[in-house]
Amino acid sequence: MQKVYFPGELIKHKNELQSGIGTYVKDDKIFASMKGSLTMNEQLISIFPSHQQDPELKIGAIIIGQVNSIREDRVFVRILKINGVKVNNYIEGVLRKQNIRLHEIDLLEMNKCYLPGDIIKARMISYGDSLKLYLSTAEDELGVLFAKHQETQKLMIPLSWDEMLCVESGLKEKRKVAKPNFNQLV
Image 1 (tube, helix red, strand yellow):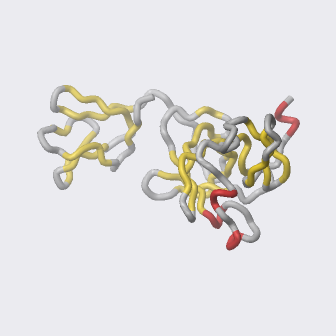
Image 2 (cartoon, one colour):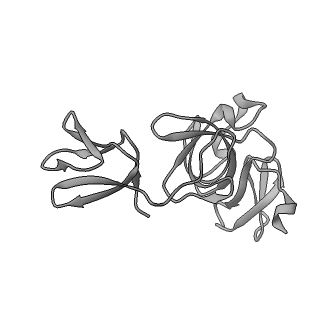
């Protein structure tokens, strides 16, 4: 999948390159002036509009995403679907500690809620900075949908609101689990 650039996003330092269609130069750096894909012809950098349309991003949208990385106070998520529609371009979401659940936020340990590779369901709560969306899982039906056990790398299923069970080994791991909707599985 080709990276999509957004207006104002840094493409490259100018060096020997020239700014073409859909780009501009500021402080010896080339930036995108429109949403689109990068094209380079010899020394000319251009951005052409994407033909693939992503689903409309609205506050309150339900997203499905994959956890990329975690920090002490936030989780970075690659958004895969918005309101059930597949995302064609790379969109990143940020899940801040205070938006993981409604209670006992000060006792929260990020690595006991999410781990890289987890597939989560979240709600978009605001447009962030740096082309990121802010997400929340502070509802019962939001959280981890699928995960692999750290040791066995086997599928885990929800056991309770804060635990998942490895289907092969019977080992448990802590997560902020989405309340299963068994009607969706049929």
